[in-house]
Image (cartoon, rainbow over all chains, first blue to last red):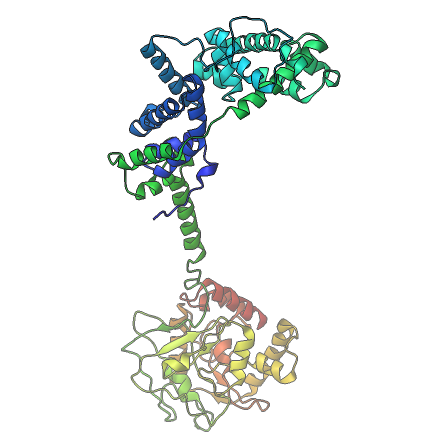
Length: 195
Length: 379
């Protein structure tokens, strides 16, 4: 029985974590509901679009929070902390694999991505654009790619990206700027064909 | 910021940009053509990202929740929810609900204690002040034999009505507690026999704010409202013969009431009346016996806590003359009144210069002031 019924939807992530650290289970359930899909998709893009692996990594992430809630520093932003933990998990996974897959996104069969230029005579539709985007992302520098993905795929702000990656906000800005311009130039050919 | 730049590019056309926005956008694109290309790219990338998202399976949530409920080590009773709410550790001391609620409770209780305090004055009002003095030496004999001590007689030796009653309280105390003052009863109703004192009973005198002396009542109920604060009540008592505790009516006040000119200048009236009474007294033939006069005089003196010359027994009573003592008590029968009253009781020693000596020391300051003002009117 709860004497004081709390409206967890109005709580911030940090308040929920504080309550969970004191033993409030409902607070953690609220946190899980907020970040379940975010983390699954993050791992899905990071781990070669492997759905099963993505859910496993998401399960491991949340169980770590359940086992050690005190590992979260209440002074920090929970969202950036969560993505930083997930990013470190992916780095560890990369090391375990020892083999970095150049295609970070599984490239469907029949699509060649070796040539940097896209022949304008090839009619490509919107579906091809998506595939080509993934290919071009893999060709980017890891640092630029990481920043671009956090910004456009995860929806983090510039400061949040800086906290997640533990780098300077200006560095994030420059990397993101470079990645955006490079991808826009390489995929500009699709603009003429896509209506 | 890049975020702002992207939002500007996605939401506005190049020609719609303000100078400030154009300056920001110039960090990413140069010119209108690049602006359009970037606008298309960002829009297309957002569409791709939206379609490329996946949903977590229900089994994932089930696994996580199972693991959550299996952890009992850090689980606490539901009461911790209250503790967390009342005493959060991450907030300042003054911002914690427990501190704020306790402070509010203290203020509320303090306000209620102050608001509900007993505000009744403790003895500040002169209401029913009663002083009981038990003097074993006091005798209250209702001796009505003519010529005896304490009895007033006329020239023929007839006992004046009420004279014995007058004598009952004018006895020397002999004890430690002095009288509050002379007290006597002038019964305007000769047929009233209620006020006979009994022998051996302790004398209780009561004095009201107006300075009127009350005959000691036989019972405590008779003392009810015998002490009067308002002048109108004292007047009511004077006229209401059935109320316990008779007033010694002053001739002045009685005449005023009879005439209905209550609001006449007291000083002028008293002066006028005093002249009349003076002449009447001088003509009256009622004289008290020497012994009774001496005794009364001595009692009056002792009661008033003053030592006056009481040897002069021939000096007549004198209104406002400053005669402090020794004056014989002369009784008069006012044909206009319904009874006999002893004006000398009040007249004697109530001169201008002796008011302060007459006023018993036991009276309160308020009563003292009122007595002084009252005596001033008798001049």
